[in-house]
Length: 186
Image 1 (cartoon, helix red, strand yellow):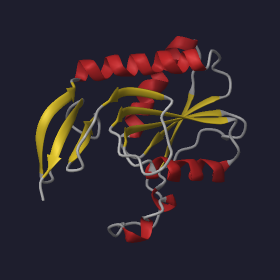
Image 2 (cartoon, one colour; image 1 turned 120 degrees about the vertical axis):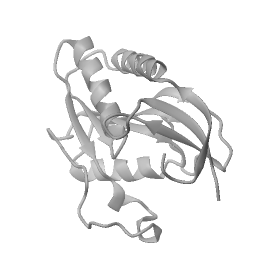
Image 3 (cartoon, one colour; image 1 turned 90 degrees about the vertical axis):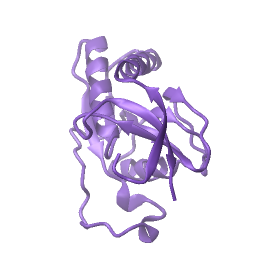
C-alpha cells in the first residue's frame, strides 16, 4: 500500500481468502447446478484475478471449463467526468471470450462499497448483449451503499467507518494475498 493509509486490521489472511473463495464457488455452484450458459467476468482490476480463481474452482466443480473474461467499466461510471484524469482514453482491461447473450453472468469484484462501479459494469454488460441474469459476487462487502445494489455471493461482510477502506491485496497485482481494513489519513 503506497498511499496515505494505516493498516488497522487484517481481515483475511491468504489462507482465509482461499477458504472464502472456496465457499463462494460452492454457493455459485448451488445457485447454478449446470455450467451451461455460465460466464464469469472479473471487474478491473482486482476482480480479474479473483474471477480467475473462482473460474478455476467452478471449472473443477463442474468438470467443464467455464468461460471467463474481464471488464473495465471506467467509462460507464456516473462520476467519470469528475474523477482524476485517466491517462488513456481506451478501455484498459476488456476480454470477452463469448457473447453474454442469454448467459448467466457472474460479475466478480473485490470490494462492494457504494454500488456505483457495479452499476457501471452492469451497463457495460448490457451494451454487449442481453444476459439471462447477472449475479454479483464480491470478496468483501463493506456497506455504505448509495445505489440499491446487493451481492448474490459474499466472502466477508464488514462494517466500516467513512474514513476506513478495505484493501484487497492479490497476486499478481500485489506481492501478497490478504485483505486489510485501513484508515485513510488526510
